[in-house]
Image 1 (tube, rainbow, N blue to C red):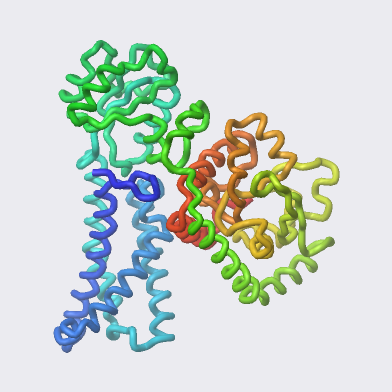
Image 2: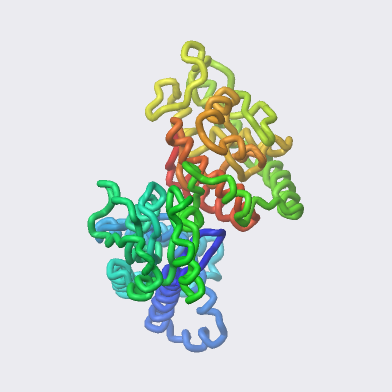
Length: 463
């Protein structure tokens, strides 16, 4: 079964896995409490131990998340899983020690957490091995069939093959054309011969994905209608691609799909909440971070010649330009000879202090002033330079549509893809930006903030 959260697919088994792991951690703490504490039964009845166990569970699962233990691409080997699990539990111990030092009443009892670790390993490790086995066996996955073998079909096949936990199993492909050489050989390809519905029932398919690059004169309308009438779900490939990846298939996207698809709404309440939150968070952030801002300013002055702040013209909502503020992370007049250029990996123009600022996104702190002024929002597409916007608008389809909302300090593209320093990378970021604009809401903004905190803590994606 597939759930849709923020217009992205989330298999029910994935949600049950996370909930189940939380229950196991909770049970590990209760078992440790039963062994270590004489009065634990009375405490359990009163809810005292139960509440404290819940705190340990939440801290442990947060540390598991921040150590990428819910990303199966990262933990695809048992060695990596073991190393990250050890690291996560170590960080959990440190965090809980700090919490207990500050609020001693939250402690269950001496030694309970360390005994819990032993139970946790005994319960969680087999649970994770079992879950990986379920994924590799494609158990509880929804069987789908793709109609078409062009670029969109290949993209969908690649995403399903690359994501063990996507919740889909490809039963076959329907196509009259010869699949390209890059097409996976293990996938069964069937001709369009008027037996689409019979084949779908034979393969126990729950969903048919129409992913044809050219539909005119090729779409098996009668077959698809019959499948629909028999309860088989029929959907466009662009829609599945969006739900599967969290981005839009911009490459050959028909404008009619954008026009008639759900989304791209601008509720007045959402805009009010975003602006009010921006004013409160930016003003509060400026006041609270003032000592840090002073330290950064001194470090920049001591490290290299030039001003502390760096102002640069950027394109905002509806293409209006504004001056974006940043801490200077490059040498003075870095573009005097080269002109406007993207930063590159190991860019020699970046100063020693600048490397640290960029790694932890500290160079972006002055943009809280841009948010307070109303030029930007906390969440939105990153504002680009006018020189690049003119070039990219001529090259990339729907590029200027990203300027229909206010730009942000962070955004869906930043937490999903990272830095884009070329036209190809910018195209990928555009897919994520359009997904955000299409599905913009307060809950997805909160999720982006949560993911941004994770990226900053891990020091990833900077350039």
